Amino acid sequence: MPNYKKPSSKFIIKNFFLVYLVFFNINANAINGYLSIDYSATDKDWSFLPEVTNSFDYSDFSSFELMLVENNIGLKLNLGEFYLNLERPVQPKSLALNAESQLFEFFYILDSDKSISLTFKNQTSDTQQIECYTFSSLTIGFCEEAVLSITNRKEKYDILEDNKLMLLDAANKEIKFSYTQAIDTFFSDEYILYLAISKNEFDWLSPIEELTSGFIANLSYKGSRIGDLVTNEIKRLPQRDTFELYKLGLNFYKNISIFKNTSFFYDFDVVFVETKDYIIYNNINNHNIKFETGLNYKIDDLTFSLSGTFYQNNLFGYEDISFNQRSEHHFSSNFGTLNIKLKYNF
Image: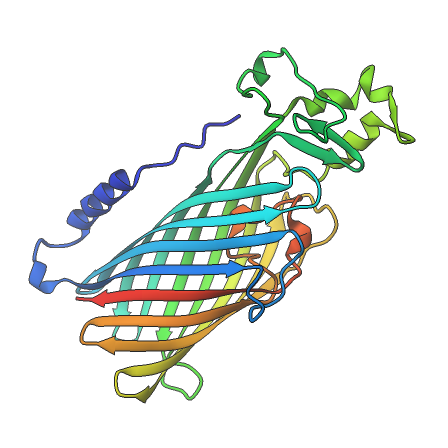
């Protein structure tokens, strides 16, 4: 299994300020920017959000963001954590994805109403450990329902702990170029046009691969060869070869004052996605729409936001670490979140 090492938050923040010292003059009075904390969540029991798939249980996303601007140069740091929990009728009945992300964005302000930026994002997941897996009607592993338990003495399986059938890892890196233009229209205050490429890596390790051939593979279970059951299910596991997602997106943002200190806003984003070297299991979409709307309440330099977000095709194009052959059938369904945000401008 590859070693996807996560840089620590202290390491990231330290290097962020080293970059800051390189790009900015040490003059605190000239620095502008903001500090914000975001939190979004979805629960299957929240009936006021779009209906989720049967296996979905809960998901949330939290982030810390710092933006610094001096003259015509800006630098943004975002540290995020994405969590997704699934509850399934077959093994593995509970499956959780926990991923951390680090984002750096460099801005250059062309003039008072337009800017360009370059973003680098890195995301890695915790290793998922699976005790049992159901292959059609055959459950293999170390749970009460298991019909077959397997181990293997090959050196590459030494990393598997006791009663663990499978390990899964995931990581991705993304680079994005954006052009932002302030406008004054009825529909929007600004628009952002962006291009992005993400490189996605998934890997898994399990001795189930040894069941695709040999003596056990030729045994029959409920009228089917064990080797055929395992081979068919392996096709649904995340591919081990790296694949890329190419994105073209357009974003519109509008903020409308409705009361003193209170405003209504919406954020509309559409992204078109093309894959390279991705092996489609059934079918996938080529786009997604994200629409967020809510209220901002501002007191001096502090802003509190409460909003909801709707996704047309789940998180396709937005949370790449959750997309692979095993999950692609979920990415044609609507998805929604509730969001809160606290932002301090300085």
